Image (cartoon, rainbow over all chains, first blue to last red; front, side):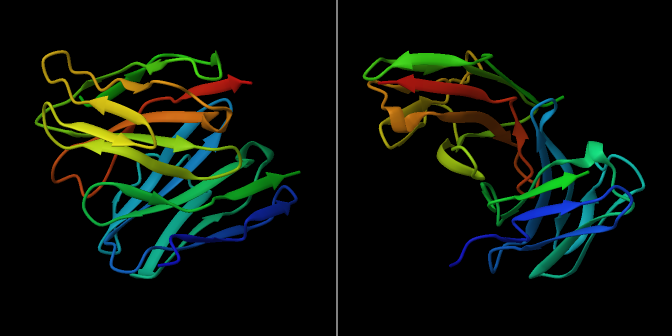
Length: 111
Length: 113
Protein backbone atom coordinates (compact mmCIF):
# COMPACT_ATOMS: atom_id res chain seq x y z
CA UNK A 1 0.00 0.00 0.00
CA UNK A 2 1.18 3.53 -0.73
CA UNK A 3 0.29 4.80 2.70
CA UNK A 4 -1.60 8.01 3.38
CA UNK A 5 -1.18 10.45 0.52
CA UNK A 6 -1.39 14.20 0.99
CA UNK A 7 -1.26 16.98 -1.55
CA UNK A 8 0.19 19.42 -2.05
CA UNK A 9 3.33 18.86 0.02
CA UNK A 10 4.00 22.58 0.16
CA UNK A 11 1.64 25.50 -0.33
CA UNK A 12 2.47 29.18 -0.27
CA UNK A 13 -0.42 31.59 -0.55
CA UNK A 14 -1.34 35.15 0.21
CA UNK A 15 -3.59 36.20 3.03
CA UNK A 16 -7.23 36.10 2.03
CA UNK A 17 -6.87 33.32 -0.52
CA UNK A 18 -8.67 30.01 -0.33
CA UNK A 19 -6.53 26.97 0.42
CA UNK A 20 -7.55 23.35 -0.10
CA UNK A 21 -5.54 20.47 1.31
CA UNK A 22 -6.19 16.95 0.13
CA UNK A 23 -5.83 13.52 1.66
CA UNK A 24 -6.20 9.97 0.42
CA UNK A 25 -6.36 7.49 3.32
CA UNK A 26 -5.10 3.94 3.29
CA UNK A 27 -7.56 1.70 1.48
CA UNK A 28 -9.85 -0.12 3.91
CA UNK A 29 -9.34 2.28 6.79
CA UNK A 30 -12.58 3.64 8.23
CA UNK A 31 -11.37 6.64 10.26
CA UNK A 32 -9.62 9.76 9.03
CA UNK A 33 -8.03 12.51 11.10
CA UNK A 34 -6.80 16.03 10.33
CA UNK A 35 -4.11 17.56 12.55
CA UNK A 36 -2.25 20.85 12.63
CA UNK A 37 1.29 21.14 14.00
CA UNK A 38 3.10 24.35 14.96
CA UNK A 39 6.06 25.09 17.17
CA UNK A 40 3.91 27.13 19.52
CA UNK A 41 0.89 24.85 19.88
CA UNK A 42 2.32 21.45 19.06
CA UNK A 43 0.10 18.78 17.48
CA UNK A 44 -3.61 19.63 17.49
CA UNK A 45 -6.50 17.42 16.34
CA UNK A 46 -8.79 19.48 14.12
CA UNK A 47 -11.47 16.98 13.11
CA UNK A 48 -11.99 13.31 12.57
CA UNK A 49 -14.34 11.20 10.49
CA UNK A 50 -15.57 7.67 10.93
CA UNK A 51 -17.13 5.94 7.92
CA UNK A 52 -17.07 9.33 6.13
CA UNK A 53 -19.14 11.02 8.87
CA UNK A 54 -17.63 13.84 10.95
CA UNK A 55 -17.50 12.68 14.56
CA UNK A 56 -15.67 15.44 16.40
CA UNK A 57 -14.90 18.86 14.93
CA UNK A 58 -14.34 20.63 18.23
CA UNK A 59 -10.73 21.28 17.28
CA UNK A 60 -11.57 23.28 14.17
CA UNK A 61 -10.33 26.77 15.05
CA UNK A 62 -13.12 28.81 13.52
CA UNK A 63 -15.61 29.01 10.69
CA UNK A 64 -12.87 29.73 8.17
CA UNK A 65 -11.96 26.04 8.40
CA UNK A 66 -14.10 23.31 6.88
CA UNK A 67 -13.51 19.64 6.12
CA UNK A 68 -15.31 17.14 3.97
CA UNK A 69 -15.09 13.45 3.25
CA UNK A 70 -17.29 12.75 0.24
CA UNK A 71 -16.19 9.10 0.01
CA UNK A 72 -13.97 6.57 1.74
CA UNK A 73 -10.93 7.42 -0.34
CA UNK A 74 -10.78 11.20 -0.24
CA UNK A 75 -10.96 14.10 2.17
CA UNK A 76 -10.33 17.84 1.97
CA UNK A 77 -9.53 20.53 4.49
CA UNK A 78 -10.36 24.00 3.29
CA UNK A 79 -9.37 27.36 4.73
CA UNK A 80 -11.24 30.38 3.42
CA UNK A 81 -10.04 33.06 3.80
CA UNK A 82 -6.52 32.14 4.89
CA UNK A 83 -4.56 34.18 7.42
CA UNK A 84 -0.85 34.26 8.33
CA UNK A 85 -1.60 32.55 11.67
CA UNK A 86 -2.80 29.50 9.71
CA UNK A 87 0.79 28.81 8.67
CA UNK A 88 1.59 25.31 9.93
CA UNK A 89 2.11 21.72 8.86
CA UNK A 90 -1.18 19.93 8.35
CA UNK A 91 -1.24 16.16 8.73
CA UNK A 92 -3.82 13.65 7.66
CA UNK A 93 -3.93 10.23 9.32
CA UNK A 94 -6.10 7.16 8.83
CA UNK A 95 -6.95 4.24 11.06
CA UNK A 96 -8.79 0.95 10.96
CA UNK A 97 -9.24 0.19 14.67
CA UNK A 98 -6.37 1.34 16.86
CA UNK A 99 -3.14 2.84 15.60
CA UNK A 100 -3.11 5.74 13.18
CA UNK A 101 -0.99 6.02 10.06
CA UNK A 102 0.14 9.52 9.18
CA UNK A 103 0.75 11.14 5.85
CA UNK A 104 3.86 13.22 5.13
CA UNK A 105 2.03 16.48 5.78
CA UNK A 106 1.36 19.69 3.89
CA UNK A 107 3.49 22.68 4.87
CA UNK A 108 1.28 25.76 4.50
CA UNK A 109 2.73 29.26 4.48
CA UNK A 110 0.36 32.21 4.36
CA UNK A 111 2.04 35.53 3.65
CA UNK B 1 -10.95 12.79 31.40
CA UNK B 2 -8.30 11.06 29.31
CA UNK B 3 -4.84 12.59 29.10
CA UNK B 4 -1.17 11.85 28.54
CA UNK B 5 1.73 13.57 30.26
CA UNK B 6 5.27 13.32 28.94
CA UNK B 7 8.52 14.60 30.33
CA UNK B 8 9.42 17.92 28.79
CA UNK B 9 12.38 18.15 26.52
CA UNK B 10 14.60 18.72 24.89
CA UNK B 11 16.68 15.75 25.91
CA UNK B 12 20.30 15.75 24.74
CA UNK B 13 22.39 12.60 25.00
CA UNK B 14 25.70 11.33 23.73
CA UNK B 15 25.77 8.38 21.37
CA UNK B 16 25.48 5.02 23.16
CA UNK B 17 23.88 6.58 26.24
CA UNK B 18 20.81 5.07 27.90
CA UNK B 19 17.49 6.73 27.11
CA UNK B 20 14.36 7.04 29.21
CA UNK B 21 11.41 9.22 28.27
CA UNK B 22 8.70 9.20 30.90
CA UNK B 23 5.02 8.96 30.05
CA UNK B 24 2.07 8.72 32.41
CA UNK B 25 -1.59 8.62 31.56
CA UNK B 26 -5.06 9.16 32.94
CA UNK B 27 -7.83 7.17 31.34
CA UNK B 28 -11.31 5.87 31.87
CA UNK B 29 -11.49 2.23 30.95
CA UNK B 30 -8.56 0.22 29.64
CA UNK B 31 -6.53 2.09 27.08
CA UNK B 32 -4.09 0.90 24.47
CA UNK B 33 -0.79 2.76 24.66
CA UNK B 34 1.51 3.89 21.88
CA UNK B 35 4.80 5.57 21.17
CA UNK B 36 5.11 7.49 17.92
CA UNK B 37 8.29 8.99 16.49
CA UNK B 38 8.58 12.00 14.19
CA UNK B 39 11.83 12.46 12.30
CA UNK B 40 12.64 15.94 10.98
CA UNK B 41 10.42 16.93 8.08
CA UNK B 42 8.26 13.80 8.28
CA UNK B 43 4.92 12.66 9.66
CA UNK B 44 4.51 10.62 12.81
CA UNK B 45 5.29 6.92 12.63
CA UNK B 46 4.17 4.23 15.02
CA UNK B 47 7.20 3.03 16.99
CA UNK B 48 5.61 0.52 19.34
CA UNK B 49 2.40 -0.26 21.17
CA UNK B 50 0.93 -2.25 24.04
CA UNK B 51 -2.72 -3.15 24.39
CA UNK B 52 -3.03 -4.49 27.94
CA UNK B 53 -1.39 -4.32 31.33
CA UNK B 54 2.12 -5.82 31.60
CA UNK B 55 2.50 -6.00 27.82
CA UNK B 56 5.87 -4.88 26.53
CA UNK B 57 6.07 -3.19 23.17
CA UNK B 58 9.39 -3.19 21.37
CA UNK B 59 10.85 -2.06 18.07
CA UNK B 60 14.26 -0.89 16.76
CA UNK B 61 15.83 -1.40 20.20
CA UNK B 62 13.19 0.69 21.95
CA UNK B 63 10.98 -0.82 24.65
CA UNK B 64 8.06 0.28 26.79
CA UNK B 65 6.04 -1.68 29.35
CA UNK B 66 2.38 -0.99 30.10
CA UNK B 67 2.26 -0.48 33.89
CA UNK B 68 -1.31 -0.26 35.10
CA UNK B 69 -0.38 0.15 38.76
CA UNK B 70 1.65 3.29 38.04
CA UNK B 71 -0.33 4.32 34.92
CA UNK B 72 2.93 4.62 33.02
CA UNK B 73 4.42 3.66 29.66
CA UNK B 74 8.02 4.86 29.79
CA UNK B 75 10.14 4.58 26.63
CA UNK B 76 13.64 3.14 26.99
CA UNK B 77 16.60 2.31 24.79
CA UNK B 78 19.87 0.91 25.99
CA UNK B 79 22.19 2.62 23.52
CA UNK B 80 21.00 5.54 21.41
CA UNK B 81 22.37 6.48 18.02
CA UNK B 82 22.55 9.81 16.22
CA UNK B 83 19.83 8.51 13.90
CA UNK B 84 17.43 8.31 16.88
CA UNK B 85 17.29 12.11 17.01
CA UNK B 86 13.60 12.90 16.64
CA UNK B 87 10.49 13.93 18.52
CA UNK B 88 8.78 11.15 20.48
CA UNK B 89 5.06 11.21 21.28
CA UNK B 90 3.26 9.05 23.82
CA UNK B 91 -0.43 8.39 23.07
CA UNK B 92 -3.43 6.43 24.28
CA UNK B 93 -6.55 5.06 22.70
CA UNK B 94 -9.74 4.07 24.46
CA UNK B 95 -11.64 1.10 23.10
CA UNK B 96 -14.51 2.14 20.89
CA UNK B 97 -12.96 5.50 20.14
CA UNK B 98 -12.73 4.72 16.44
CA UNK B 99 -8.98 5.11 16.41
CA UNK B 100 -8.97 8.53 18.06
CA UNK B 101 -5.69 9.00 19.95
CA UNK B 102 -4.87 11.30 22.85
CA UNK B 103 -1.28 12.52 22.35
CA UNK B 104 1.24 13.89 24.77
CA UNK B 105 3.06 17.10 23.84
CA UNK B 106 6.11 15.30 22.52
CA UNK B 107 9.71 15.09 23.70
CA UNK B 108 12.54 16.17 21.44
CA UNK B 109 15.62 13.96 21.58
CA UNK B 110 18.99 15.06 20.23
CA UNK B 111 21.84 12.55 20.15
CA UNK B 112 25.36 13.92 19.73
CA UNK B 113 28.18 11.86 18.21
